[in-house]
Image (tube, rainbow, N blue to C red; front, side, top):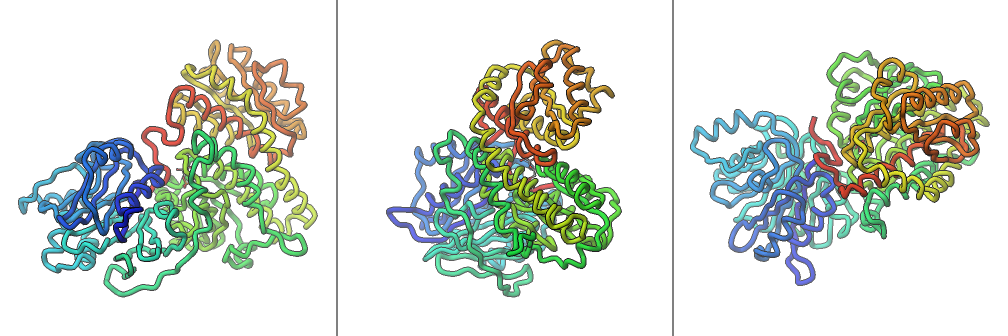
Length: 618
Ligand code: F6R
C-alpha cells in the first residue's frame, strides 16, 4: 500500500534522478494510485511536484513545469488513508521552511497527539495527512543535529504505528534516509547509484542486487554507500540477495493489460511452483521449509490465515489437506483471527498465505500465532518479504511478479503450493503411500496443459462476458472445492467490473439466497466432476432449482458432461480432471469473464478503483 522510491546517484544525460524515480513509481503504481509526487534535492534546494490521480497527471505537470537537475530524490504513489486524494494530501510533504521533504507508507497512529503538540508550537499544516507531522518533527530534529540520519532516529522514537519513511534535506544533497517499522522497505544496490523501494519492482530495471531491511531499522544511502542501523543507532549487517526476475517480467509483453498477461501465465505459474520439489527417488523434498520434521509430525491442527483471494486458496486447500492428511484444517480471515481468542498452541501449524508477503492483517495474525507458541509456515510469492522472513518456515510460490492489482496467477500458484504442502505432510506422517503421493503429483503436473486448453478455448467466454456488460448482479454457486471457486469468481467480478456479485455454497441456496433469483438473474454454477456422482447430481439439481425460478444459468462443467446441457443457458467446458484438481481449471473462465466484462465497460482492469495491491495497513 503506497509505493515508495528513493534514489541517490548521478545526473547524466541518459538518465536523471527524476526519470529513475518516475520509472520506479510506474512499476510501483499497483500499490496505490490515488496521487503521485516527487521531491528532488537540487542546487537551489528541494524541488517538488505532486498531483492527485494517477502517475500520468504528475508526468503532465512535470512536462509543463520541469524540475531542475538533482543528485537525490524521493517519489511516492499513494493509497489514501488519512485525508482525501487531493494535491495537498499527496506526498511528499515539506517542512515549513521547504528544506526537508518526507514520504510515508503506513499509518502513524499517534499523529493526533503529535499534531496538537506542533499546532501549539505554531506550526502551520498544509494537509490532512498523518505524514505531515513527520516532516515537521524531522525538520525540528534536524535543526538540532544537522544530521538527517540522527534526526530520523529521534523522530521514529516518537512515532507509533506502521511506517516506512523516506526523507531528503536541502543541505545534504547526496543522501536519502529511510526508516521502517511494520511496513516494507528494500535497498537496491547499484554501481555508483543506490535505491530504496517498497519492493524490488522500484529498481529492478537498474539492479537485481537487493538488501533486506529488518524491522525497526534506519538506512542512509548515497550514490556510493549504504549504511544500516537499528533505531538505537547500532550498525546492523543485512543479507544481500539476488532478485530472480528481471524487468521484462513486469511489462505487458504484448497483452493489452497486465491482468490478461497474468491470466495467460497461469500454466507457467503452476508448473514453476511444482518444479524441483522431488528427490532422486521421486519423493517430495521441501528443503526450503526450514522446519523440523519432528514438529510437522506432531501437529494436530492447521489454521490457514489469509485475506481475500489468498484466503479462498486456503479454503480450497482445506479440502485437500484434510482428505490427504486427516488433520483438521480451519481457514480464517487473518484480521478476524488476530482479534478473537483463537485456540492455538505448539501443536498447531498456522499456514499464512500471501502473494505480497506484506499484508498487514496476515502479518499481525502470524505474530499473534507465534506469541502463542504455534509454528508458522508461510506460502508466499515475494522473496524476502516480511511474512516470509518472520515465519518459521516458508514455501515459495513461483508465480513471478503479479502486477495487476486483482490476483489471478498467484491464486493458482497458492493452491498448488498448498497442495504440495499437504502431500508432503501426508508423506511425512505416513497417511499416504509413496505411490499415492506420486499419483497426486502426476495429476498436478498435468494441470498446466489443461489450463492452457481452457485459455485456448476462451473466446466463447469473452463473447458472453461482453454481452453481459450491463447486468446489475451475478450469483456464483459451487459445492465442495467449487464453493471457494464461486466466492473467488464473485470477488473478481466485484473488484474488476464493480458489479454486485455473491458466491454461495450451492447447498446453502435453499436456505435463503434463492430469494435473490428472479427472471433473468445470471447464475454461474461450478459443476463437480462426474467422478463424484453424489456431488455432481446435487449440483445438477441446484441448476434446475434456479432455472425453475427464471435464472439464466452459466454452467462450468467438464468435457463430455451431458447431464448439464438440458438446464444450462450457456456451458463453458474445462478438461476432465479429478475433483481436488478442478479449482485450478474452473476458476480460469471466471477470471476471464470478469476481466473481459470490465474491459467492455471501459474500466481499468489493472488498477480498479479504491484498491491497492499490497495492503500494508490494518
Ligand atoms: C483480490 C486480491 C486480494 C488479495 C488480498 C491478500 O484479487 O488480490 O483479495 O488476495 O489482499 O493479498 P496477499 O496475497 O498479498 O496477502
